[in-house]
Structures are given as structure tokens and as C-alpha cells.
Amino acid sequence: MTARGGIDLGGTKIQAVVVGEDHEVLGQARRPTPTTGGPQDVADAMAGALGDAAEAAGVRTKALGGVGAGSPGIVDAGAGTVSGARNLPGWEGTFALGDALSRALGCRVALGNDVQVATDAEFALGVGRAYHSLLGVFWGTGVGGGIVLNDEPWLGRGAAGEIGHVVIERDGLRCPCGRRGCMEAYAGRGALEIRARKLEAKGEKTKLFKLMEEHDRPRLTSGIWARALDQGDKLATSLIDEAIAALGVGVASVVNVLDVEAVVLGGGMGVRFGEPFADRIREAMAPHLFSSDNPPVFEIAALGDLGGAIGAAMLVA
Amino acid sequence: MTARGGIDLGGTKIQAVVVGEDHEVLGQARRPTPTTGGPQDVADAMAGALGDAAEAAGVRTKALGGVGAGSPGIVDAGAGTVSGARNLPGWEGTFALGDALSRALGCRVALGNDVQVATDAEFALGVGRAYHSLLGVFWGTGVGGGIVLNDEPWLGRGAAGEIGHVVIERDGLRCPCGRRGCMEAYAGRGALEIRARKLEAKGEKTKLFKLMEEHDRPRLTSGIWARALDQGDKLATSLIDEAIAALGVGVASVVNVLDVEAVVLGGGMGVRFGEPFADRIREAMAPHLFSSDNPPVFEIAALGDLGGAIGAAMLVA
View 1: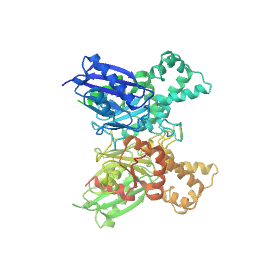
View 2: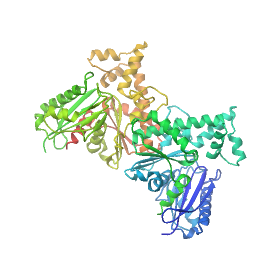
View 3: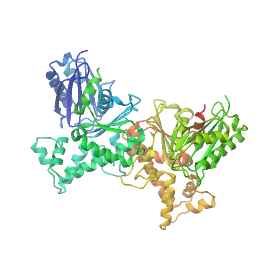
View 4: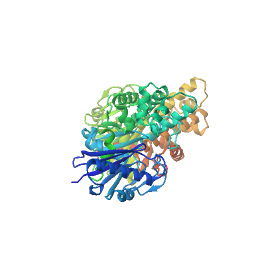
């Protein structure tokens, strides 16, 4: 079996890997997700990241057995298209991402849902190996959910797992999706940045945007949030406290519905903040769990930041 | 195949049926659920109701091929026990309901979860026949959920489907389960009665309790609520309006997670209020559905009030 490629298209960054027969990482690379332009610009950045990963692995992309890409939005794997990827620039419509990548890379390309491939990777190779049912909670630009039941992904009619849009507060904050009170409105990195900007504009003090400029970031990345927390920034602390409370309520609600064996926390924010924050989310869930004496196992994604890209490469295994 | 019995143990009433080979109802009877005493008193009333149904069907309970019973609380079907049935009198602990019924009826007895057997019945015989995935929403004393995915019940680790305890409002109203902000705290008949009593005690005017006495009911049954609404009772109207809004938010959240093909509304309140209220719940869901252009089918349980009992009889089919 030849090497394969995997690309995880996130709202903030594009992570690419080249993996070998046993899913071992032979090379990896990362590029920021374009904030302007359109889907073709994003596809170019994806192909560029995979090219870098292939170079690191010492292979040419043409020689790969295939490349899988995990994308947000509505993924039509059969047609090779992605529609309505709201967190990406100019991607309200439908774009033939599979063809665009295939042309640029010179090999076959398969598409999947970003959150589901990351969940599948954790299920097959990471924390989930020990379980038959799993909820993946991907806390990043948005809050995505991946579901495995009876050892199989549960996709519903193609849109299952939208845990970020579980309502935790009726008539609550406006979510980037346009609705009100969604968990993502309180916890998503994108929503947190919008709130931080508004609160700063209203006169609240914060180091967040100064840190962003100092570190030459186009956005409040999870690293910037972590730095602000380390420096005791009050606004950042209170917003992250609220995000954790929201994750506790929303994830507990989903557990009350699914009663899965394990919850796996991943995503840029989830992986960056790590164990102490996982503990806090676990504590925030406790008061809302119906089977309070039988909570699910709650662990951080074992594959860390690379899980999405490794899971994407599994699409062409 | 001989006739079988089914008993649906609800928080307000016990519904019993005797069914034939094709699940056709040969006899039915109903008794109020005891409000005082303990599990043995409830078991006696269940046996009494099934005896009445058998008499109506012209058979002796001893001659039945078996009796199934759907119960709230934690049902251990193997052990024949029910634990922690909060909506029933003195049933915090564990009671051997299977043995108690078997002794009284002179035939074998199988137990199941009340909501799940009702969902299974709708799936096999009712609205759900056309679908492969289904969410049953049982709006009665509490709000229960039954889940069918890929043509199979999804039970999780035994406690899946607790949709009544999806949080719709952080730090919201106290739920009968002791937690805060659960959908059931706003929509369950039991919670609504507690709220109505408190509001009346604070001086709000309502005909609810007068109607209850006039119709010699021990509780605010769904029929009493319906009468109060018909008479334009302001308090009843505002509480039911809030219940519908809560059901809209909570059921939409669950649909965002599961993306099922169909939602079936059952339970004492759901069946009694019928189509106009189902329309209102459907409308209340709409603003919170993530796949707003692809909502699930939303229908009232085709088996109506008898679905739980018919589903229970399927346990011994």
C-alpha cells in the first residue's frame, strides 16, 4: 500500500498529513485558512499544504494512493462538492472541491465531513478504540459533533451531529449561524472573537487583540486565547468561563439523548486547552446529566491536532 | 398464536389492552394511576386494568400468551424490576414488578421502557412504518423520547432518549427531576401542574382546579387542560403556550443532533391536543432547526392513546 494524504480544512487553519500503511504520519504541514477570496483560494491553500506535507515525507503528490479531505459545510462525497461552508470565505454556494484538489495534486481525491472524519479517526485509532459508541466534540471555530453508534458513524440524513446548534438558552445570544441561543454562540472560537470585539468596542479592556497583532495572527486563535488566559486577562477569562459552562450544558443535553459510552474532546480549542479544561467541562456537565451516576468517559482526542487530517486520509485507505 | 396483553403504566393513567395475532385490539380498559401507596398498589391497579381488558375481550388472563408492561423509571427487563420511577407513588427504590404482575395474572410477564415500547409500536405499526429513523416525543406527565435509528431502537447504555432533560434554558426553572432548565420543567404535565398551583397560590386566577374538582380528577389531566383552554383560561393558555415553545426548542435541538427522518408526537398531552398543537410545535421548532430546509416529517402517533399498551404487548409477541 502506498502513502496517502489527508487534509483537514478548518475555519482557522489547514492541516495536511501524508501517512503510511498503518496510518503513521510520514510528513505534515499547516497553512492558515484564507480569510479573503473564495473557494478556489481555499483549495489552492489546501493543495499547497498537502504539497508541503508530501515534501516533508519525501514523496510527490502524484505518487500518493489518494488524498482525503475533511471539510465543513454540506459535503456531497459522491459529487465531490462542498456547499454552504459558512466559516470559509465566499463559500455560501457549491464548489467542486474534489475536482479542484485532484487537478492540483494529480491524484484521486475523496471528500468527507471534517468532524465525522476526525471522529472516525479517534474511533479507529485513538481514544475511541475501547468503545462501541462515541460522541466527538470538536471545539474550534465552531462546535461540531461526530457520532458513532454500534461501531458505525451515525450521519442521519447527512446532517446529524450539529451539536453546536443545540439550544442552551432560549432567546439567547445570536449565533454565527443566524439563530439564537445555540451552544456555538457561547463557545465557538468565531463567536467568542465577535463578542470580544464588541465588548472591547464598548470600552472593556483586554489584551486579546494586542496579543493577536504581536503574534501576527489574522484572528484570535486558540493560542492567543491561551496566552491571554495565562496573563490573567479578565475579559478572556470571563468569556472562556462562559464557553465552558455552555459546553457543559450542551454536551450534557446530547449525552442525555444518546447515552454514549464516551465523549472525546477535540478541535483547535479543545486540544490546545487540554486536560485542565476538559476537567472543567466535565464538571460543568455533571449537574445536567440525567444518569448522573453513570456519566460517559470524557477524554481528550488522542490524535490531537492531527486527528482530522489522519481521519481524512482514512477516506482513501 | 393466542391473545396477548399489554399494559402502559403512565404517571396519570394505566392503559391496558388485549390484542390478537395482528396486534388488533380485542379489548381495552383504563384505570387511574394510584397517587398514594406504593409499587404494590400500582401493580394491583395494573393487574386490575388488564383483567378488565381481558374481560372485555372475553378471555381469562391465565389463557393469555403473555403480558408486556411498559414502565417509566429504570427497567431491568432481565431481572423483571423497575427502579426510581419518580412519577409514581413511593417508587424511589427497586420493585419486582414482573413477579407481582405474573402472580396476579397467572401468565408470563415481560417488562420494557414505556417510551421505547410506544416508539417501537409506532415504528412497527403506526406512523413510523414508512421510515428508517424516528424520534418519538411522548408529551405526558413528563416528556420522554424514543429513538429508532437504522430500523433498530437506540437505547445507549440503557438510558438514551431522555429528551425531557435536554436543557433549553441555563439556570432556568426547576424540573421535577431536581435539575434546572430541562424541557420537561416547562412542558411536562406534572411540572405544569406544580407551576399552576404555585401561580394560583400567588393570586393568579384560573379555572383549572375548579374544573379538576368538577370532573372528579385527582390531577390536572390533559382533558382538564384542554377544557381550560377551550374556556379561554388565561393562566392555562400562557402555560401551554410556554410548553409548546419549550417543546419546539428542545425537540429541534434533538433533531439537530440525530437528523432523523420523522418525529412522532405521542403521550397523553400530545394525543389529546392533536393536530392544531402539533402544528404549533412544528412552527416553534422551525427557527431552531439547523437543516431548516430539510425538516423531519412531524406527525401525531397513529396508534393514539393505545400505542404504549400495544407496544408493550409486542414485548411478548
